[in-house]
Length: 207
Image 1 (cartoon, rainbow, N blue to C red):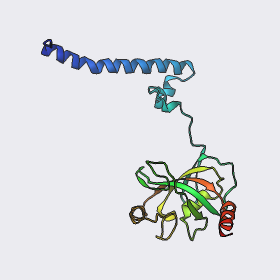
Image 2 (image 1 turned 135 degrees about the vertical axis):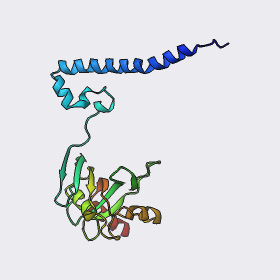
Image 3 (image 1 turned 60 degrees about the horizontal axis):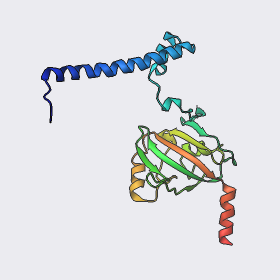
Image 4 (image 1 turned 30 degrees about the vertical axis):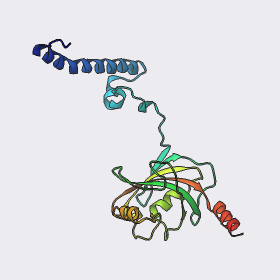
């Protein structure tokens, strides 16, 4: 059985509901503001850093993943995500990597790691600017095995011609990647192996 609800009651409930949520949010923010001020953050400091005054979320409690960042002379902007502990890559080396390529607005372009299954198909790249895009070569040089970097690569340091690696073998992904060659691209790359290990494997397979 449904009890009749007056129109006046409905209108009052709808009008008060947002106010109730607003009061609860204000209460949470106020409690956090008092806590921050007790820790030494003044009201002026909270105004300059508004993120501190916002309600605490789980994401704010995570450790920052970026270790350091720099801008290279070519215009490439690099963020160090994980510092590897293995052998260091040098110009002329042959390296095995996994990467994800996105447009600067975050839209996915191509990756060696399947987004659904997580299966990876690493690629082997020569650190030679005649065979690989300049920006990615600069990012990989100096990396250590196990390391991961993220880079914003401008067009002049990217796919200046269609024969530069890394490039997908499949027609669809290849066309998709090259259609964005004239805009900045974001590469997140992880160094898996270095030349000596790869060459040793090649010799063993031939033997």
